[in-house]
Image (tube, rainbow, N blue to C red; front, side, top):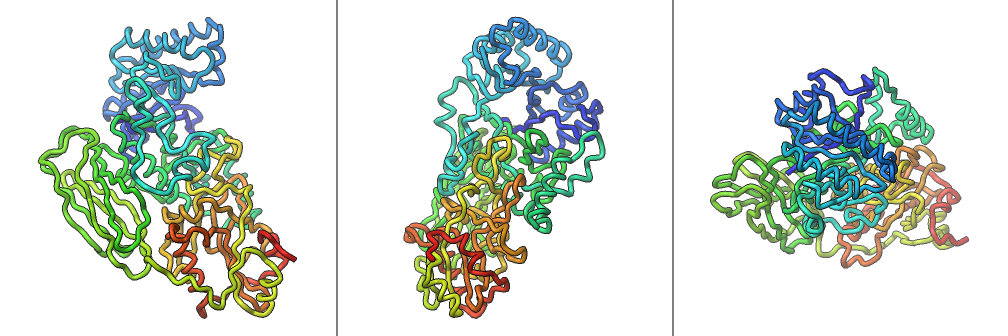
Length: 597
């Protein structure tokens, strides 16, 4: 099973691919530390040093001729270009063909024009001519009978232009989906093309690393935008919170691939950032292959390695007394079958305390490939209030562990407003209540111009014409008493899916800088608007809570929204409700939908 990333010829210090083996030892070691076993060289061929190191380390390479689709129109009746493709391929193989790490060969990236005619001949010719490696027409497309394997973009969570309609944004969180039906459409083995592309906020501390030919002018622009918004002090919080969201997306993406028994692997875009095309910060490592401080190789290998435990959970939200049932599987792409596996499971609370635990009955040996282990069935216990629980599954030999968070909510909660006026418009009644010193919960809508989704930004919002979503997770003031009855950390997690789905963020740029939202979506770095989903303030003697998440519709089915509504009301009904930011009614009016004079 191929677990790869894309190397796009990004070498900020030298401006060209290093010719020394030391660098390639570092690059391949970092790749292996994050559970990968191959690299695709996007539209280029690496130097001799890379092949020598990959040979020693047992690391696979996909090499490509230097062709991308914007050159692909040359296939249109351009015989000279066709001849050059074949002659360039001959030169690459003559120079590097004896390296065992050179296992995969493609003509280039995402072609155009007469691609099937020319590239079908190219793949067929090389399959017949040289059996030392596997050949495919190109990365991305076309999928042809002549290909020894297909590299196609379909088997992944989100495609270009799909945005809020993608599975991760449109479908409630679960861990059952896979790509079996998609892979059945293609002849031969299927490898996912450029999977992932989940972005993170810029790490401005990386700028000091640019000591060579490339300078971080892009980061200078992004830092300037952030400063002009008055948000520079939040840069590190944005990085850490968006980093958690990014890893969460990659975990679901990679596990869905591993759950697909007829998928041959994936090629990430990418393990590292890409500073071109407007800047795509889609890596858990930066452009120098360095960690960013929120995900280590050890953490990443829990869900991206040769042996990975999997759990198919039909949902992540439960109520006490419901039955959690999960198919436990093992993606075993190690060298051998695993004899007499000992599989344990546990359900733990946020402090690490064990709520339930046990062993799973398994066969005497678990073979290679995607293998079923057992069905885990347990009754969700009665808990005090809403809680996050973590289901962990461990394999002792070899030592492997993986985990998935679920959220458990009470069957019933108190939603009586009492002394809180709940309204969806700033009308005469709500204005008077505030001016009389009363409490008001204003349920409003944000602006549709900021497309709010659960997933992180895909590739970037500049290059893709502003495709949705525009946000990179959220910063949450988890210690605020408004969340005393709602389980959350200082970043978004899967429980927030139900709350952001269909919601819009409020743009708070024109409000005082001291206003600090309790729930703050992180805007794309190209704009860095100050966004909010929940904030509080004083309006004269009155106390106001403003929320642009849907807290009132279909609450019998929407456990998460019901619980947050309860937690907000409980806080507002307590003596702790004491906002420290003063605003004027006129400043709130622009945020209120259906405003009535």
